[in-house]
Image (cartoon, rainbow, N blue to C red; front, side):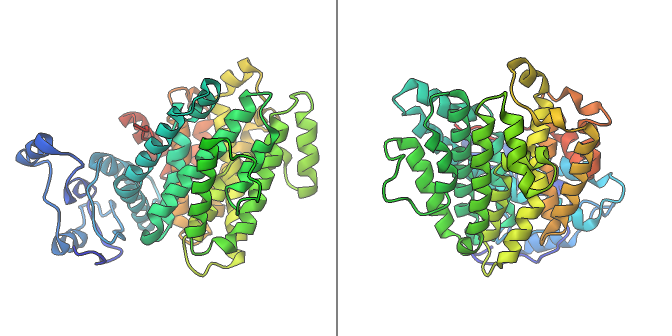
Amino acid sequence: MGKGASVERSGRLRGDEFANLGKRRLSGEDLNEKRKQGLVGAEPDGQTVRDACDRRDASGRLLAELDAPHVVAMQSGDVAELCLREASRATHYSDCSARALAAVIVRYLTTIQPHASRELARWRRRALAIPDPRVRAHVLHPYSADESAAGAALFAVLAPWRHQLVLVRLLVAYVLLWSYVDARTERDPHADPRLYDALLDGLREPLPADPFADDVYLAALLAASRCGCAALPSWATVAPTALQLADDGRAVQMINHGSAATAPARLRAWAEPRGGVWPEMCAAASSPLAIHALMALAAHPQVDPDDAASMAAAYGPVSALGVLCDHLIDATEDHAAGSHSYLRYVDSRDLIDLADRACRGVRQLDAGERHGVILAAMTAMFFSRPNASNTTEPHGGRGILEAIGPPAPQLRAVLRATHIRPPRAR
C-alpha cells in the first residue's frame, strides 16, 4: 500500500492470517529459506489486505481491527494467533474486545516493540559509558528487568500513528528516568535529595541553573523527556495534571526511601488530607503509569483539561494495582530484605476490589477497550513471572486476574506457555 493509504477499519481477519500478511523480520538466507517453506508471504498490497479483512474464520471470534496506515510484518504471528484463540474461548468476550485485543497485539509487536528495543539499546550504551562504577551500577539496575520500559511503551497503542515514534521515545526515556531516580535514592543513602526533583523536571522547562548538568546520563534523560513532551500537540493541556502526579510521586518516594520506622505514619499524614485509603493512594503515587497515560492522551489534538483529569482519576487504581501486584509477587524477597511493603496494610480481598475498580474505570474512558487491554497485559505480565507462585490462590493473583476478566487470565496463560518476556536492550 502506498504511504498514507488507509485500510478499511473494523475489518475481520483470522488469527492465523496475522503470521502471513507480511514478511517476518528476517534477513538473508533465513528469509529465503522461510519463503521456500511457505512460512513467509510477500508484502501484501492493498487488495490483499482488503480481501483478508473480508474473511472470517469459522468461529467468528478471532477478530482484528486493522487501523494501521499499512500492514507490516509480525515478529511473532504465532503469538498473536495464540492470544486471540485463548481470549476467544472466554465466556462473554465481545467482538469489540477481541478487535481491540488484536489491534493492540499487532500494533505493539510490529511497530512499537522494535522502536522500544532500539531506544533501550541506545540508553544502555549511554549507561555503559558512565565512568564511575558505583553510579554505573545504579543506572544499569533497571536493565535487569526491562519490563517497566516495555510496559510504558505499550501506551503508544493509544496514540495517533503520526505521533507514535515520538511517544515511544518519550515513554521509554521517562520510565528510565523514574527508574534511575528510584534506584539511586533507594540504594544510596548519600544520594543527592534533589534527585527527586528530576521526576518533575523531565516534564517541564529546565531551570536557569540545572542542578543535574554534571550527571551526563541523567541530563540526557531529562532532555529527551522534555523534547518528547514538547513534541506532543496537547502537552500544554495535560502538563498541570502530569506535574501534580509527579509531585505526588516525589513526596511519596522521599518518605519510602527515608526512615523505615517513621514511613507508615508519614505516609498516612501525607494521604489523609487527600481522602481515600492511604495505602492505595501512596501506592498509586509510587508509579508513573498515570503519567504515561497522560502522555498518550497528549498525543491527540484538542484535548480538554477535563479529559486529563478523567484520565488521571481512572489510572489511579491502575497505578496502585501495579505497585501492589509487584509487592505481592516479591513478598518473600521484600520480607527477607526488610523492605517496606503496602501489602501489610491491605487485605487480599481489597486487591480484588481494586482490580475490579481499575477495570471499570479505564473502560469508561475513550478507547476504553484498548485501555482494558493495557490493564490486562500489565497484570498478565506480572503474574507470568517465574516467581509468581501465589497466582493459584483465589484471593491472590488468580482472583485479581479473574476480577479484571478477559483477556487477562488468557494472556497470562499465553505468556507463561510461550515464555514471552519484554524485549531486552541489545
